Length: 158
Image (cartoon, rainbow, N blue to C red):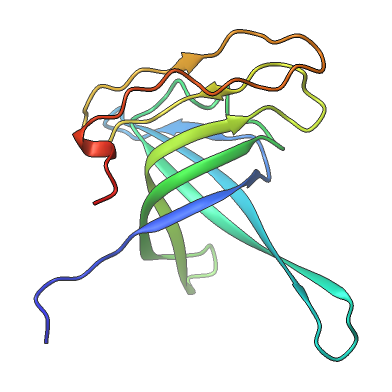
């Protein structure tokens, strides 16, 4: 049996509700939100296109300032890991839930009807400092320009 394992989740989807930040008794911020991801396929028998949507609960720790940007309908990219935990509900029944514990959260673009520019908000994992950026506004009808970005050693995919 291998001694290594991988627990990695990458999601690109739309926020299903506004993010909510609460604080633990120790003062750590815990931001939660849900992401909808969809897939489309063509039914082989009928030739019709079908679509299926999955919902993912996401938890982001120690990032109290991002909830204002994580609003319903925004497209977001999330990297993290799966975590299953259990708790007892009000009736004393044990409930299991699986959620994505986010390491990175990036706002990909505005809402569908938003003419504003795309924003990028990255949340650091393990306290590393990363900045948030806002690209300049663009004129109506002008295609969006790519964000200023310098690749570092952490960004190389191999």
